[in-house]
Amino acid sequence: MSQGNIKCDDVKAAFGDRIKHMMNLTIASGLEYGFTICEKKDGNIVEGGLCAGDRCSVDYQECESDQKDVGRIHVHPHIYSFLPSSSDVANGMRYQQGVKCVVDTKTNMSCGNYNNISTEKLNEYSLAGEKHDICLLTELQKQPAYATFNLEALGEHWATIQPQVFDSAMRKCLPKTKEMRDILQPYEYCETKV
Image (cartoon, rainbow, N blue to C red; front, side):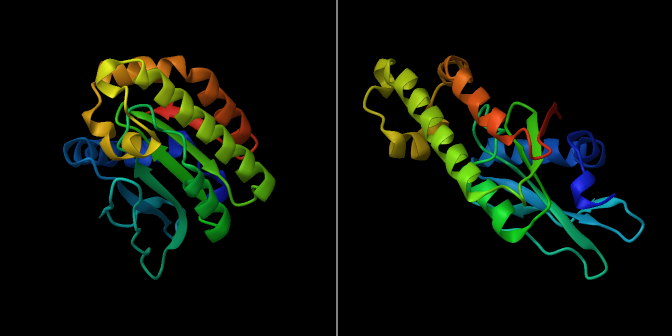
């Protein structure tokens, strides 16, 4: 199996239990967890070692010397945040990391291969992401407890937002989420439940 052929179901089959474990670690800590997807000489994919990050990123371990780095997977510590961030897509493009998978804390996962994404498409995706964040912030600000939130506060204090309030706001922003998905479709993009 080569990096261009790894799909959501391949990742789910190979790492489903490990992904659920990472989700539980992320829920408990608020930190991103992830690992490198490594390909053995026989074509099987294996985990390159679990890494803890911060609330916005993960530094990945290298594959064993006889294995090939064919991708990355990590958990975003937000509900419904299974789409890659602009940084995730840019890193895939810049470092040719193969498949890039992102999981949220509600068992949603997306994967894509962003090696060949153009700078123009990356900028379009970044803009769509900003529109999504502004939509989310606008919806949250309608609640008195979050009326003073700004984008920085949203990033820093997302864990303090009541899950039902966050879910409701995310549902109202689904058209913005669709816009982001549509941009990623040509890049072997897929979604599944873990």
